[in-house]
Image (cartoon, rainbow over the protein chains, first blue to last red):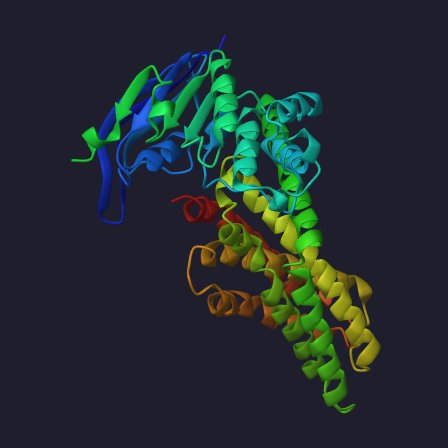
Length: 209
Length: 233
């Protein structure tokens, strides 16, 4: 049972003098898929980075709780899987080397068999030992999806997750998301096929003025 | 007692994670040779020029000055890469999503220290081989000077590398920012190494060693406190 919750408590974010959004309050609960919509530059990515603890809000608080215990924002990354086109893995390493090293850096157990299963599902198994620099952008996106699912995180944050994926890749992505149980899934996108998967939509533009 | 045990456990876990950042950086370095090649080339060229141009009547003080000068610039040529490559390749976010800032700084410091110690050993052996006036009378004091100096330079270089990775003029800024911070350390290191030409004992250089230890502790503590502000936003 996943009791993970994320609460955005009246948060605002600005860079220098540019306000991105203000007074945003929201609650993310398990077993739901949340969509974040808004035009380009409206702050979708900024919100995802704030939730994952990479950025800190200018005002307000973000609370991560697990089984009613507050998790330090500094350690929130332990519970989060993140996919984004701008997330770059180490391309001198193979997919397995990336997963092995990054799992150990994160302090998580690296389950090679589970990883091989996901590589097979994402049709990357044959090239598992090849450096990522030889991969196409679509294959790299599949690797990132696998990377996010690897440690079975409580929260999946997906920023335009099907970017660069072909039709088959998009189908595999949809299948993999549907079988995720008890997770908080947050998808930021302008792609209608991704947004239709979501139960709740948060329109970021409502908080930009 | 329980709190101390928990704290030790946390430190041990973080050190293991930091070690894996070091492993990742070392494996990456062995494949890409971003820092290592430039450092080795700098050392080879400098030692060759110094050994050809310096005459035999050069003073010991000057030899010690040259020794730490070569170490400083070798460090400047390689150690800035540690955060700059992450920024240039766009892998900063990957690191941020997998480790706390304390773990990242510890891992990067470990890697820079290891790289600096390797290059410093090469520089020391080259100086001992090619410059006759590079005299070390007390090996223990030299070893302490060498280790404390390496820790000081590596920790300063690591935090400055983190600062400059966020700027546009990385190359020049690294040396400009490092020089005033490392200068007090270099002065003491030159002084200590110069004293080693005479037959001195450890009790005669306690003050210098205390300065080196204090410098290292202050820089490392300040770096850990500041790193979170540099790393985020």
